[in-house]
Amino acid sequence: MRDLDELFAALERSEFRRRFRLRGREAAYLQQKGLETILAHARDFIEQRLAPAEPLNDGQQTPMRNHPAFIAQHATATCCRGCLEKWHQIAKGRPLSDREVQYVVAVLRRWLERQRAE
Image (spheres, rainbow, N blue to C red):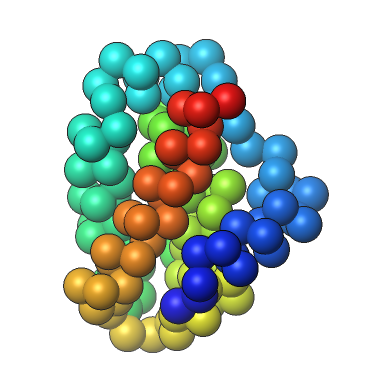
């Protein structure tokens, strides 16, 4: 797992990751439901779609829209096990630990908080 300051500096250098922003429906949904509710949803998504050792449809399990957490996952490279390994040094082929799930949620929190401030 990476230091969050180091991670976000690296994400800022990625043209692909930088292009993700909350807009429209997803931004309104975050505003309406609040950060804590969105993060609770995110934790559920992580536990169901990312935490297993071999997630179903890995690399394609995270939609590109329709929930703020999905946008945040793509923006922060927490969308699949391949990205977790490449960007966060979390190895594939084994279930995520509770600590790793908490780390992913913390990454998403930081990105979503920045989006609310913009």
